[in-house]
Amino acid sequence: MAAVAPVADQLVSYFYALLFVRHPALRPMFPVAMDLQRDRLVKALLTAAEHMDDPAVLSHYLRDLGRGHRRYGTQSFHYPAVGEALIGALTRYAAEVWDAETEAAWVRTYTTISGIMIDAAAEDERHQPAWWEAEVVSHDLRTPEVAVVTLRPDRPYPFLAGQYTALETPWWPRVWRHYSFAGAPRADGLLAFHVKAVPAGWVSGALVHRARPGDVLRIGPPAGSMTVDHASDRGLLCLGGGTGIAPITALVEDVAGHGGRRPVEVFYGARSDHDLYALDTLRRLQRTYPWLSVLPVVDADARFPRALRGLGSYGPWDGFDACLSGPAGMIRNGVEELQALGFPARRILHDAVEDLVPYAY
Ligand SMILES: NC(=O)C1=CN([C@@H]2O[C@H](COP(=O)(O)OP(=O)(O)OC[C@H]3O[C@@H](n4cnc5c(N)ncnc54)[C@H](O)[C@@H]3O)[C@@H](O)[C@H]2O)C=CC1
Image (cartoon, rainbow, N blue to C red):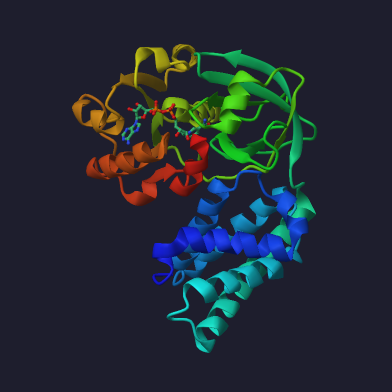
């Protein structure tokens, strides 16, 4: 990996060129524009290499990746084609260090990786579909850029509050983006999402400015481990930044649904008052539930978690777990701030920062 890191862009472009020249039938399985796809392949390889010595983390990651590939229509027989193109690209771009031993090691590694992904996908197929169709039933523009989009899935869709899923719109086929469920599971089965249109954000732009009731989207299976442990009665300190408040609202509803036996303190970060589109909803919940406190934190300089330092009258946090949701930078800074406040890492929950990257589009 070190040998090819400086030429990763060329290597990945060459890899896809080899794959599509040798197997043209695979091209339609990928998005028209491949930029982000290239980054994702490199990230996946780097993540796998980074956790090479930690089989538990690595196989968890690869199993998720294998399951996630079902929604692209990936079949087990596609893996050898990808492996051959990868080895072909490595042979060319790592020429200086490439020898028979290195090639044998990469073949072994790829065989192991693809085996784990294929098995996970096959097991997943036994108990859930690769995707659900879901009809837009309401579309509520809360600010010029943020919409709350509510969907009705075509089949029952089990998930846990705090999780997220991937969405594909009819306007950008094969481009999937992650969004968190903006509420706990509901009796009517509807699913709500908060979507912010960002520059160059194809899916989010289409969801905010184009989607209307009656449109049909696809949603992948639920994922993510930022969920409430109902066996515990520890308090929850929740930091939600921007549309990252969506899963925090879900956690609050989930605690309420289980009798509200724990204190929940929500800090809702935004860059301006105008961006606090979910504050009314949270305030309504706060009036209903005595165990809930909600504090908006407005700062234009993207230093939201640091603002916690000035909130000396809150806490102490001894009996609390923490949940973080928002932009990747906020999560990174938030984890540091929480550790400085005395939270051990195992008491801080958030989605994988790598998974947040595609959120931004
Ligand atoms: N839509 C959804 O369901 C979810 C979205 N997200 C992510 O949340 C983000 C929300 O975007 P926006 O609403 O545009 O957020 P934003 O850029 O307006 O920021 C929201 C808050 O986070 C703070 N912040 C931003 N960057 C920071 C940094 N580097 N360090 C410390 N604080 C920082 C800001 O000060 C503000 O308080 C997106 O990146 C999205 O991917 C995360 C989870 C769920």
